[in-house]
Length: 563
Image 1 (tube, rainbow, N blue to C red):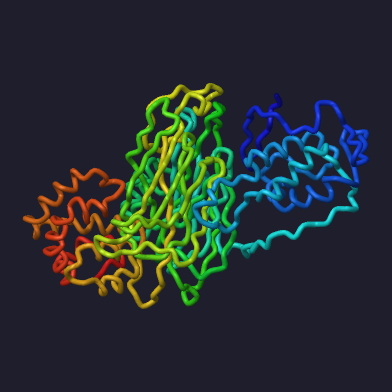
Image 2 (cartoon, rainbow, N blue to C red):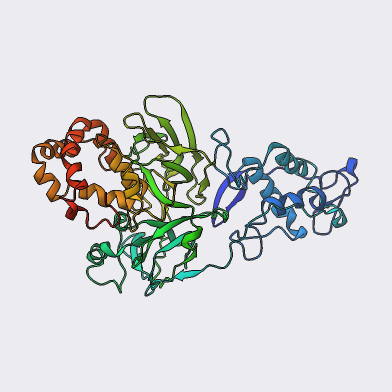
């Protein structure tokens, strides 16, 4: 048995496997006329060779990481190392752990598929069976590499006002937020963003938000009144007060896409970087971290669609100790009527599978968005084909089915401070030793420059198309402006003015919502389904007060949320 170094760009782990070998001792192959070099590596001009057959495949499929300065720990450019690296390379290809690709091909086609097809894998197998022949360098033909659109230089860079100083002495995790030094004097449209973790080996994720001016008071409260310092960010409270700009997770970034889509950032907004630091090695380093964010922008006249992020999430996951296949399913109603752009699944260390599908309510017809064999170190954002939408149709609208599977057996426990943990009951939590079940879905909606602006920009034009007797349509118009607008609008819908003037309707509705099974994961579903009749009665009373301005003060914190 050999110790195989399975290398995922950014992670090294050791597993036991037997490397492919043509024999136990032979280093010559008479039928191909091969000989053994002074380095112990077999060369030949016949058969399957490194230079002619394997090297072009490695350069096409592996060199993106296994290159000088790349994130992989070694390169494949020295033929003298093939006697060691060859068996490791072939073992990883045969096990389909390299190149790392976890998206299941029976879900849908995905741009940027890294997996090797059967004929390509067969070349590696033949190379092993024939003795890892090096061959003649003159036989090498450079491969045709896939075209990659490189982004132009970023337009602006958002830096934290001071370095992050996470505290990893009391545990392996710390969540901290810091505002950036980037001013936003006028409305900005961010088409692309790239977080630059200063210590990627310790960074679990980076999420960037843009908090609009009317929410700065709440941001200051989260920062205990001092925005010049970092502040705790457990449970990601900033996501409820400003749109999500970017989410960085371990793994490769999706390729730059030259589209006219962008996230709207209202004038006067403050960028906030949320960084989750994690160290389960036991080193607990004291450090200063200067994680930053590169931003690419569009002028307003070029924007065609606005982007907004909605997480499909299951906060109620249950993962019993010792369960090697703990399945958690949830159906989520998202208040969105828009085309999908990307899907970005997220779990932690016990996760083994995540599946996301869109289904028409009451139907078995499904559209697969994500189906991944989970690998925490290889998280990806997957583009969704054009034309895939989440449609609002009242009670018959589309829903999102989310399934997360976990292995909580003894053999699958993380190692902390050099000690493998014992299985324990695990639920939702921010720590890397807790778990998550979510898929960040990015939607695009057509941009209308004549519509309202601000955090809920575009709400007015959407709302004007709502039927007066449709209680759910206003929520969908909030949702189409993004999760932060919906969170603000949801709170405002049950503001003091509306609930007081509609007291008879609000009391039983609020009591029903308090008992809803999935209020945190599916507040929209609770309103339109479990409490649907009561919600309809409340909206019959509250919506006229919103339309005529009687209760406009309830909505003042939600810029752009006007009838």
